[in-house]
Length: 356
Image 1 (tube, helix red, strand yellow):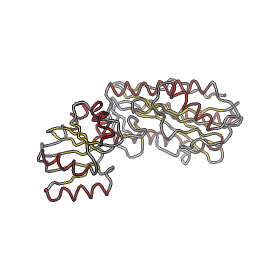
Image 2: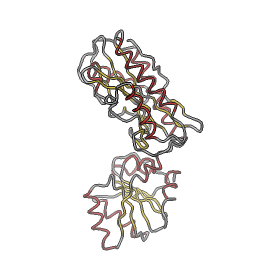
Image 3: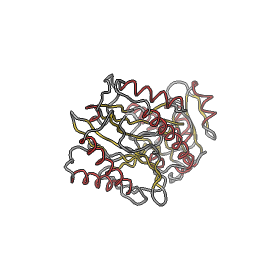
Protein backbone atom coordinates (compact mmCIF):
# COMPACT_ATOMS: atom_id res chain seq x y z
CA UNK A 1 0.00 0.00 0.00
CA UNK A 2 1.43 3.35 -1.02
CA UNK A 3 1.41 6.64 0.91
CA UNK A 4 -1.45 7.97 -1.18
CA UNK A 5 -3.74 5.15 -0.08
CA UNK A 6 -2.67 5.60 3.52
CA UNK A 7 -3.54 9.28 3.26
CA UNK A 8 -6.97 8.43 1.89
CA UNK A 9 -7.59 5.92 4.68
CA UNK A 10 -6.68 8.61 7.16
CA UNK A 11 -9.74 10.57 6.03
CA UNK A 12 -12.15 7.78 7.01
CA UNK A 13 -13.62 8.45 10.48
CA UNK A 14 -14.57 4.84 11.21
CA UNK A 15 -14.06 1.29 9.88
CA UNK A 16 -17.61 1.04 8.53
CA UNK A 17 -17.01 3.40 5.59
CA UNK A 18 -15.87 2.37 2.11
CA UNK A 19 -14.66 4.61 -0.70
CA UNK A 20 -15.37 3.62 -4.30
CA UNK A 21 -12.83 4.80 -6.89
CA UNK A 22 -13.71 4.56 -10.58
CA UNK A 23 -11.84 7.47 -12.20
CA UNK A 24 -8.81 6.02 -14.03
CA UNK A 25 -6.34 8.67 -12.84
CA UNK A 26 -7.38 8.23 -9.20
CA UNK A 27 -7.34 4.47 -9.56
CA UNK A 28 -3.80 4.63 -10.89
CA UNK A 29 -2.66 7.10 -8.24
CA UNK A 30 -3.82 4.88 -5.39
CA UNK A 31 -3.11 1.38 -6.69
CA UNK A 32 -0.71 1.68 -9.61
CA UNK A 33 -3.16 -0.18 -11.85
CA UNK A 34 -3.27 1.21 -15.40
CA UNK A 35 -5.90 -1.03 -16.98
CA UNK A 36 -9.06 0.47 -18.42
CA UNK A 37 -11.54 -1.59 -16.39
CA UNK A 38 -11.57 -1.55 -12.61
CA UNK A 39 -13.14 -0.27 -9.41
CA UNK A 40 -11.29 0.24 -6.15
CA UNK A 41 -13.03 -0.47 -2.86
CA UNK A 42 -11.03 1.20 -0.10
CA UNK A 43 -11.76 0.45 3.56
CA UNK A 44 -9.80 0.40 6.79
CA UNK A 45 -10.24 -3.36 6.77
CA UNK A 46 -8.59 -3.81 3.40
CA UNK A 47 -8.28 -2.46 -0.11
CA UNK A 48 -9.61 -4.32 -3.14
CA UNK A 49 -9.37 -3.87 -6.88
CA UNK A 50 -12.21 -5.36 -8.88
CA UNK A 51 -11.41 -5.97 -12.55
CA UNK A 52 -12.15 -8.51 -15.25
CA UNK A 53 -10.22 -11.40 -16.71
CA UNK A 54 -8.49 -9.28 -19.33
CA UNK A 55 -6.54 -7.47 -16.62
CA UNK A 56 -6.15 -10.13 -13.93
CA UNK A 57 -2.41 -10.69 -14.38
CA UNK A 58 -1.76 -6.98 -14.92
CA UNK A 59 -3.64 -6.07 -11.76
CA UNK A 60 -1.69 -8.59 -9.68
CA UNK A 61 1.58 -7.22 -11.04
CA UNK A 62 0.77 -3.53 -10.66
CA UNK A 63 -1.47 -3.27 -7.59
CA UNK A 64 0.94 -4.56 -4.99
CA UNK A 65 -0.71 -5.14 -1.62
CA UNK A 66 -4.26 -4.97 -3.01
CA UNK A 67 -6.81 -7.76 -2.91
CA UNK A 68 -7.52 -8.54 -6.57
CA UNK A 69 -11.08 -9.62 -7.38
CA UNK A 70 -11.55 -10.97 -10.90
CA UNK A 71 -15.18 -10.42 -11.82
CA UNK A 72 -17.37 -11.55 -14.70
CA UNK A 73 -20.34 -9.45 -15.71
CA UNK A 74 -21.89 -6.66 -13.63
CA UNK A 75 -19.46 -5.20 -11.11
CA UNK A 76 -22.19 -4.14 -8.65
CA UNK A 77 -22.71 -7.61 -7.07
CA UNK A 78 -18.95 -7.91 -6.54
CA UNK A 79 -18.91 -4.53 -4.78
CA UNK A 80 -21.87 -5.49 -2.58
CA UNK A 81 -20.19 -8.77 -1.63
CA UNK A 82 -17.06 -6.95 -0.44
CA UNK A 83 -19.12 -4.43 1.52
CA UNK A 84 -21.15 -7.12 3.27
CA UNK A 85 -18.03 -9.02 4.32
CA UNK A 86 -16.68 -5.93 6.08
CA UNK A 87 -20.01 -4.77 7.53
CA UNK A 88 -19.83 -1.46 5.68
CA UNK A 89 -22.63 0.97 6.54
CA UNK A 90 -21.67 3.94 4.35
CA UNK A 91 -20.17 4.18 0.87
CA UNK A 92 -18.47 7.33 -0.42
CA UNK A 93 -18.63 7.79 -4.20
CA UNK A 94 -17.25 10.37 -6.62
CA UNK A 95 -20.17 12.67 -7.40
CA UNK A 96 -18.31 14.28 -10.31
CA UNK A 97 -17.43 11.00 -12.05
CA UNK A 98 -19.95 8.30 -11.15
CA UNK A 99 -22.60 7.88 -13.84
CA UNK A 100 -26.29 8.16 -13.05
CA UNK A 101 -26.84 4.58 -14.23
CA UNK A 102 -24.13 3.14 -11.98
CA UNK A 103 -25.37 5.18 -9.03
CA UNK A 104 -28.91 3.91 -9.52
CA UNK A 105 -27.87 0.27 -9.79
CA UNK A 106 -25.68 0.58 -6.73
CA UNK A 107 -28.45 2.33 -4.79
CA UNK A 108 -30.92 -0.43 -5.64
CA UNK A 109 -28.44 -3.09 -4.53
CA UNK A 110 -27.57 -1.39 -1.23
CA UNK A 111 -30.95 -0.13 -0.06
CA UNK A 112 -32.06 -3.47 1.34
CA UNK A 113 -28.81 -3.68 3.32
CA UNK A 114 -29.37 -0.20 4.82
CA UNK A 115 -26.07 1.08 3.41
CA UNK A 116 -25.89 4.84 2.87
CA UNK A 117 -24.41 6.34 -0.30
CA UNK A 118 -22.58 9.63 0.30
CA UNK A 119 -21.26 11.89 -2.49
CA UNK A 120 -17.73 13.22 -2.30
CA UNK A 121 -16.18 15.98 -4.35
CA UNK A 122 -12.55 15.71 -5.53
CA UNK A 123 -11.55 13.69 -2.48
CA UNK A 124 -8.60 11.99 -4.18
CA UNK A 125 -7.85 14.97 -6.41
CA UNK A 126 -7.20 16.94 -3.24
CA UNK A 127 -4.56 14.41 -2.24
CA UNK A 128 -3.04 14.54 -5.71
CA UNK A 129 -2.35 18.27 -5.59
CA UNK A 130 0.96 18.01 -3.72
CA UNK A 131 3.38 15.87 -5.72
CA UNK A 132 5.67 13.35 -4.04
CA UNK A 133 9.36 13.09 -4.91
CA UNK A 134 8.59 10.03 -7.06
CA UNK A 135 5.91 11.95 -8.94
CA UNK A 136 8.23 14.89 -9.47
CA UNK A 137 10.74 12.49 -10.97
CA UNK A 138 8.19 11.35 -13.56
CA UNK A 139 7.17 14.94 -14.27
CA UNK A 140 10.80 15.99 -14.69
CA UNK A 141 11.24 13.26 -17.32
CA UNK A 142 8.13 14.34 -19.21
CA UNK A 143 9.28 17.94 -19.32
CA UNK A 144 12.84 16.99 -20.27
CA UNK A 145 11.47 15.28 -23.38
CA UNK A 146 9.21 18.26 -24.13
CA UNK A 147 12.10 20.72 -23.83
CA UNK A 148 14.14 18.60 -26.24
CA UNK A 149 11.20 18.48 -28.65
CA UNK A 150 11.07 22.27 -28.78
CA UNK A 151 14.82 22.52 -29.37
CA UNK A 152 14.44 20.00 -32.19
CA UNK A 153 11.51 21.71 -33.90
CA UNK A 154 13.14 25.15 -33.71
CA UNK A 155 15.80 23.77 -36.05
CA UNK A 156 13.30 22.24 -38.47
CA UNK A 157 10.59 24.88 -38.93
CA UNK A 158 10.26 26.71 -42.22
CA UNK A 159 7.55 28.10 -44.45
CA UNK A 160 5.81 25.50 -46.59
CA UNK A 161 5.26 22.94 -43.84
CA UNK A 162 1.69 22.21 -42.86
CA UNK A 163 0.48 22.35 -39.27
CA UNK A 164 -0.19 18.60 -39.49
CA UNK A 165 3.42 17.99 -40.53
CA UNK A 166 4.73 20.01 -37.59
CA UNK A 167 2.42 18.15 -35.19
CA UNK A 168 3.62 14.78 -36.50
CA UNK A 169 7.29 15.81 -36.35
CA UNK A 170 6.86 16.75 -32.69
CA UNK A 171 4.90 13.63 -31.81
CA UNK A 172 7.38 11.35 -33.53
CA UNK A 173 10.31 13.04 -31.78
CA UNK A 174 8.72 12.73 -28.33
CA UNK A 175 7.72 9.11 -28.90
CA UNK A 176 11.21 8.20 -30.01
CA UNK A 177 12.61 10.07 -26.99
CA UNK A 178 10.63 7.85 -24.60
CA UNK A 179 7.17 9.37 -24.22
CA UNK A 180 4.36 6.82 -23.90
CA UNK A 181 2.08 9.30 -25.67
CA UNK A 182 1.55 13.03 -26.10
CA UNK A 183 -1.08 15.16 -24.46
CA UNK A 184 -4.45 15.00 -26.14
CA UNK A 185 -5.04 18.72 -26.72
CA UNK A 186 -1.87 19.35 -28.68
CA UNK A 187 -2.00 22.89 -30.19
CA UNK A 188 -0.29 23.78 -33.48
CA UNK A 189 -1.83 27.02 -34.76
CA UNK A 190 -0.30 29.32 -37.37
CA UNK A 191 -1.09 32.72 -38.84
CA UNK A 192 -4.58 33.97 -37.97
CA UNK A 193 -5.32 30.56 -36.42
CA UNK A 194 -2.89 31.37 -33.61
CA UNK A 195 -5.73 33.51 -32.23
CA UNK A 196 -7.38 30.20 -31.25
CA UNK A 197 -6.07 29.31 -27.76
CA UNK A 198 -6.78 25.61 -28.44
CA UNK A 199 -6.30 25.56 -32.19
CA UNK A 200 -5.64 21.97 -33.21
CA UNK A 201 -3.40 21.29 -36.21
CA UNK A 202 -4.94 21.50 -39.67
CA UNK A 203 -3.63 21.15 -43.21
CA UNK A 204 -2.96 24.91 -43.33
CA UNK A 205 0.44 25.68 -44.87
CA UNK A 206 2.69 27.80 -42.67
CA UNK A 207 3.67 31.01 -44.43
CA UNK A 208 6.38 33.63 -44.11
CA UNK A 209 5.41 36.21 -41.50
CA UNK A 210 3.15 33.83 -39.56
CA UNK A 211 2.99 33.62 -35.83
CA UNK A 212 3.13 29.94 -34.88
CA UNK A 213 1.94 28.80 -31.45
CA UNK A 214 2.94 25.32 -30.30
CA UNK A 215 1.44 23.98 -27.08
CA UNK A 216 2.77 20.46 -26.56
CA UNK A 217 3.60 17.93 -23.87
CA UNK A 218 5.05 14.47 -23.48
CA UNK A 219 3.52 11.91 -21.11
CA UNK A 220 5.79 9.66 -19.03
CA UNK A 221 4.34 6.94 -16.80
CA UNK A 222 1.00 8.74 -16.86
CA UNK A 223 2.38 12.17 -15.92
CA UNK A 224 1.83 15.07 -18.30
CA UNK A 225 4.04 17.87 -19.48
CA UNK A 226 2.47 21.08 -20.80
CA UNK A 227 4.48 23.90 -22.37
CA UNK A 228 3.88 26.59 -25.00
CA UNK A 229 6.10 28.69 -27.22
CA UNK A 230 5.17 31.16 -29.97
CA UNK A 231 7.61 31.91 -32.78
CA UNK A 232 7.58 33.91 -36.02
CA UNK A 233 8.29 32.36 -39.39
CA UNK A 234 10.57 34.97 -40.93
CA UNK A 235 11.22 38.43 -39.55
CA UNK A 236 8.68 39.67 -36.95
CA UNK A 237 6.92 42.94 -37.65
CA UNK A 238 6.47 45.73 -35.13
CA UNK A 239 3.07 44.57 -33.88
CA UNK A 240 4.25 41.01 -33.42
CA UNK A 241 7.21 42.24 -31.37
CA UNK A 242 5.00 44.51 -29.28
CA UNK A 243 2.45 41.81 -28.44
CA UNK A 244 5.10 39.17 -27.81
CA UNK A 245 7.11 41.30 -25.40
CA UNK A 246 3.98 42.38 -23.55
CA UNK A 247 3.00 38.74 -23.03
CA UNK A 248 6.55 37.94 -21.93
CA UNK A 249 6.51 40.83 -19.46
CA UNK A 250 3.22 39.54 -18.04
CA UNK A 251 4.63 36.03 -17.73
CA UNK A 252 7.75 37.18 -15.92
CA UNK A 253 5.54 39.19 -13.57
CA UNK A 254 3.38 36.12 -12.91
CA UNK A 255 6.42 33.92 -12.28
CA UNK A 256 7.52 36.29 -9.52
CA UNK A 257 4.28 35.43 -7.70
CA UNK A 258 4.91 31.67 -7.84
CA UNK A 259 5.81 30.94 -4.23
CA UNK A 260 4.18 29.42 -1.15
CA UNK A 261 1.33 31.51 0.18
CA UNK A 262 0.30 33.17 -3.09
CA UNK A 263 -3.46 32.98 -3.58
CA UNK A 264 -4.10 31.46 -7.01
CA UNK A 265 -6.93 33.83 -7.90
CA UNK A 266 -4.86 36.87 -7.00
CA UNK A 267 -2.18 35.91 -9.53
CA UNK A 268 -4.78 35.71 -12.29
CA UNK A 269 -6.32 39.03 -11.22
CA UNK A 270 -2.92 40.77 -11.29
CA UNK A 271 -2.14 39.72 -14.85
CA UNK A 272 -5.65 40.59 -16.03
CA UNK A 273 -5.20 44.08 -14.57
CA UNK A 274 -1.81 44.37 -16.26
CA UNK A 275 -3.28 43.58 -19.68
CA UNK A 276 -6.25 45.90 -19.05
CA UNK A 277 -3.88 48.76 -18.27
CA UNK A 278 -2.40 48.28 -21.74
CA UNK A 279 -5.83 48.24 -23.40
CA UNK A 280 -6.16 44.48 -23.80
CA UNK A 281 -8.80 43.56 -21.23
CA UNK A 282 -10.75 41.55 -23.83
CA UNK A 283 -7.83 39.69 -25.36
CA UNK A 284 -6.73 37.40 -22.53
CA UNK A 285 -9.09 34.55 -23.33
CA UNK A 286 -8.31 31.97 -20.64
CA UNK A 287 -7.01 31.58 -17.11
CA UNK A 288 -3.41 32.26 -16.14
CA UNK A 289 -2.59 28.62 -15.51
CA UNK A 290 -3.42 25.28 -13.95
CA UNK A 291 -1.87 22.41 -12.07
CA UNK A 292 -0.60 19.42 -14.03
CA UNK A 293 0.07 15.79 -13.11
CA UNK A 294 -1.80 12.60 -14.01
CA UNK A 295 -4.19 14.90 -15.87
CA UNK A 296 -3.30 17.78 -18.13
CA UNK A 297 -5.62 20.13 -16.23
CA UNK A 298 -5.69 19.69 -12.48
CA UNK A 299 -6.43 21.90 -9.50
CA UNK A 300 -5.55 24.37 -8.22
CA UNK A 301 -5.96 26.78 -11.09
CA UNK A 302 -4.56 30.25 -11.50
CA UNK A 303 -8.06 31.54 -12.08
CA UNK A 304 -10.18 34.30 -10.64
CA UNK A 305 -11.92 33.25 -7.46
CA UNK A 306 -9.63 30.32 -6.65
CA UNK A 307 -8.69 30.90 -3.01
CA UNK A 308 -6.14 28.08 -2.86
CA UNK A 309 -2.76 29.13 -1.55
CA UNK A 310 0.23 27.74 -3.41
CA UNK A 311 2.21 25.19 -1.41
CA UNK A 312 5.51 23.44 -1.78
CA UNK A 313 4.98 20.51 -4.15
CA UNK A 314 2.36 22.11 -6.40
CA UNK A 315 3.22 21.81 -10.09
CA UNK A 316 1.52 24.59 -12.02
CA UNK A 317 1.67 26.23 -15.44
CA UNK A 318 2.02 29.98 -15.99
CA UNK A 319 0.64 30.81 -19.43
CA UNK A 320 -0.59 34.33 -20.19
CA UNK A 321 -1.62 35.04 -23.77
CA UNK A 322 -3.16 37.68 -25.98
CA UNK A 323 -5.42 36.79 -28.92
CA UNK A 324 -6.70 38.93 -31.80
CA UNK A 325 -9.23 37.32 -34.17
CA UNK A 326 -8.14 37.65 -37.78
CA UNK A 327 -4.56 38.56 -36.84
CA UNK A 328 -3.18 35.92 -34.49
CA UNK A 329 -2.09 35.39 -30.93
CA UNK A 330 0.84 34.85 -28.59
CA UNK A 331 1.08 32.54 -25.59
CA UNK A 332 4.14 31.71 -23.48
CA UNK A 333 3.75 28.85 -21.00
CA UNK A 334 6.24 27.69 -18.39
CA UNK A 335 5.58 24.91 -15.87
CA UNK A 336 6.95 25.41 -12.37
CA UNK A 337 7.33 23.37 -9.21
CA UNK A 338 6.60 25.39 -6.08
CA UNK A 339 9.52 25.08 -3.66
CA UNK A 340 10.00 26.18 -0.05
CA UNK A 341 11.46 29.51 -1.17
CA UNK A 342 9.86 30.11 -4.56
CA UNK A 343 9.72 27.97 -7.67
CA UNK A 344 11.74 25.75 -9.98
CA UNK A 345 11.09 26.32 -13.67
CA UNK A 346 10.79 23.09 -15.65
CA UNK A 347 11.08 24.89 -18.99
CA UNK A 348 14.62 25.25 -20.26
CA UNK A 349 13.93 26.39 -23.83
CA UNK A 350 14.37 30.05 -24.68
CA UNK A 351 11.61 32.62 -24.39
CA UNK A 352 13.38 34.99 -26.75
CA UNK A 353 11.22 35.88 -29.75
CA UNK A 354 12.58 33.50 -32.37
CA UNK A 355 12.58 34.27 -36.09
CA UNK A 356 12.69 30.94 -37.90
